[in-house]
Amino acid sequence: MSTENERAGAPDESPTGAPEAGGRAAPAPQPSVPQGPAPQSPPPPPPPAAPPTPHTTMAPAMPPTAEHTFAGPAPAPAPLASEPPGGPVSGPWAAFPPPPPPKKRRTGLLAAIVAATLIAGGVGGGIGYLVADDDGTSASLSADRGSDTVARPPDSVAGIAEAALPSVVTIEAGNGAEGSTGTGFVYDEEGHIMTNNHVVASAANGGTLSVTFSDGENYDAEVVGRAEGYDVAVIRITNLQGRDLAPLPLGDSDQVAVGDATIAIGAPFGLSGTVTTGIISAEDRPVASSDGQGGSASYMNALQTDASINPGNSGGPLLNADGEVIGVNSAIQSTPSVGGEAGSIGLGFAIPINQAERVAQDLIDGGEPIYPIIGASVESGGAVTDGAQIVESTNDGSDPVVAGGPADEAGLQAGDVITRFGDRIIDSGPTLISQIWTYQPGDSVDITYQRDGQERTTTLVLGERVGDQ
Image 1 (tube, rainbow, N blue to C red):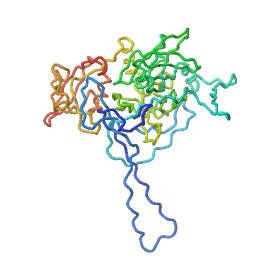
Image 2 (cartoon, one colour):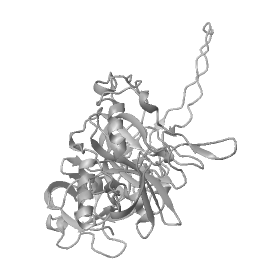
Image 3 (cartoon, helix red, strand yellow):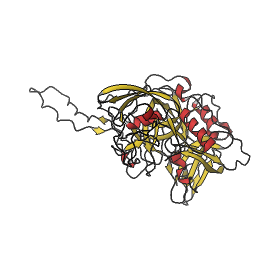
Image 4 (cartoon, rainbow, N blue to C red):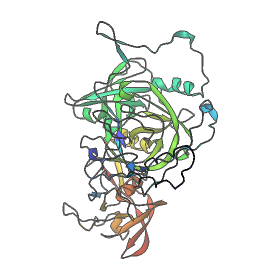
């Protein structure tokens, strides 16, 4: 997938060590049959179909045989998007017709991890839409329609957007050499704003950071804490100047179901206050994403949505039909673009809010993220395999299984292949990492693994690591 600053699905832009995501191929069209009377002799057979072309091209998020120690961020592959359900949609979305039935395709084996691109927009995109006057100057178009706007029901898309927009901000970050534009939303009344790490990373060490509300008011901000592996960050407005803040209500991402309505709010390509709608297309999608700038990969068991998400949407809220935040928009998967940024093809990924809230609170309380770990290094290639194998040796000469660590205490050894973690089947190292990070340090997890061709089980108590490596 891609972050707002990257091209979605371009493996070569993912940070070293991230797994490669697979795409699916579409069969070539067959020649049409001419109309008219049948010939006396059977027509020659049609020419062979051209080789299938990938539906999406994705660059490897990490070298296929790289290893990762679960003390730091690791890549995670995810399967392709599931098809949205058909049939009429009820509730506040009833005005929208159901999506057309999906085209039938023949597909081959697909990798289980999606390599996504982060979606922070580049600096210079601007906020709002500018048009050039005849004299060459630019004027910002106003969205104010006056007082004649007809009131919409609070539970309609328009009603939910009207309530949420004052609590969504456009973020501009930079350090003189690089910068980005993204989105964030009000987390509490003290001025904390939740967003993505890749949106504010350029301002983390002495850079500039500002937020702009929907009414055009601009405020300076500072970074409170960043979690590279989770791709979550918290910033704080340094001087509210008496402004009252209304935090967006947080929902329960564990209660989300495929087919639920979604609303995404953000600043795609610098167009702040943009609202798009869709549904939850899939849950628990293992995703490894990077910003394409050589930074660490982030991993999540994402909520997948077909709501349009583009560069600049990163860090913005994904809302449910009650106007509650259920996810933080983070990355997209997209077809390759030549000379431009990635764009939406209906495959957007959001960090579940239950996880993002926990990480944000750790950042506010201590300034650093806390990661659950198993204390072992596994192969981090993104291809679908029989599981996540603990490496036989590491590049730096350290022990593949940390002595006295969680994996060691659970009886795991170098060469063991983990095939199930809790209730989740594991097909690769990145999938394992994404799953581990849905837990908290101290949680006990049942593990199934293979050793010398025999299946075994054990229980592991997760350890913790404080801070990014």
